View 1 (cartoon, rainbow, N blue to C red):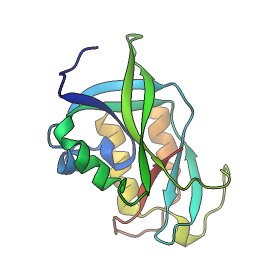
View 2: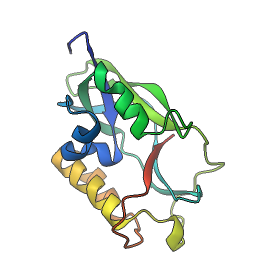
View 3: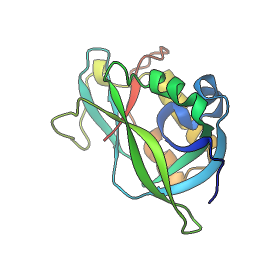
Length: 170
């Protein structure tokens, strides 16, 4: 799979699945397709108090974008790289055509000490309804597998319409 020399492939999850959202910080982003992540990951949510909780195993199928290197600093800023909230990482992705591509993504710097499946979450540790809706709409828009969309629908939310909860990949 070829791409321009002044671009990079970006592995998206969370709010950056939605075109309208990614284009706020990366207006050059062009949809490239679904891929199978070569590592297992978990979608976690972080409260403003920096408490961590596990909500749902991440799908091994993800969506990736091609974006200009000029937008990289905007994505880094969005993910808090300078503040050491996230760090940029490289992940290997296999496309449905069996091509292997390398993508940039972000991983939480301060890893939670453990991941719990099926944890009953207190209200303060649940993602906002707005953030969860953005993720769900982005997953649908990106044509991610129905199994992933169904997993997203099961995530408990706190009913808030604030967009203050960030996504986390480990």
